Amino acid sequence: MSRHFAASVVEHHDVNAGFRLLTLSPDTPALPPEPGQFYMLQANTTFDPLLKRPFSFFSAADNTISFLYRIRGKGTRALAALDTGAKLSVIGPLGNAYPLPEGDYIAVAGGIGIASLYSLLGAVPGRALLFWGARNRNELLMPERIEPLVKTVVMTTDDGSVGEQALVSVPVKRFLADHAHLPVYACGSTPMMKAVADVCAEAGARCFVSLETYMACGVGACLGCVVKIRTQEHPQGTFRSVCKDGPVFDASAVIWEGAGE
Image (tube, rainbow, N blue to C red; front, side):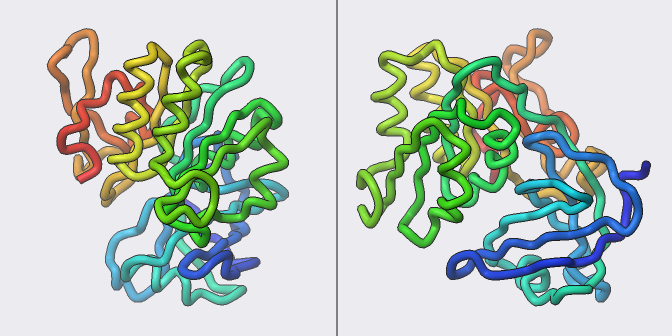
């Protein structure tokens, strides 16, 4: 089966203000995705914008793939305008996956980062201690689908409209004081993931992050999404492609200066 395929829109609706859920059905058999992988979507046939856009998949079942996304630029505005029956050009699944935890684990989502983590929550239901941060109530997306999949959930918002008024890394740091043996999985903005990586490093907890950056090809050919990663051979860091070598990395290996810019 090819990773390049055409797909049809079977459902497309608003979730909250500025956020939509898109469900596609591949026109031909497609490879099943693993938690944490992503797809490149061509929003329309006019080639404006020219390049496909990367989207973490939200869920996949019964020959459908769903994407939860924020409308924030030309590409996502074009995507948001698609009606049922519209055709898209798709590449995927791409990238690596979250390593599945063997027991309980900590999931840390920042805003739309829940779109990537949802597939992990569904793959190992009932094990996650979810810390979920957002700017406000509107950006805590689809809690009715998230909460049944987790063991506990702690919410934070910048404006205090839901949960603690704090950055999500604040309650994570408190919790890690007695639970540093649990692995941590994080997805969100680069500053949020760096903050979570820092508190995990202080506590001695293993942390995996799903990086977000601009992508052009999605397969590592253009080198447009490189970040600096420490390896055994290159302890000072060497460049790796988020699309091909990631998007999931061990947080302790990420050199955060310049990441996600």
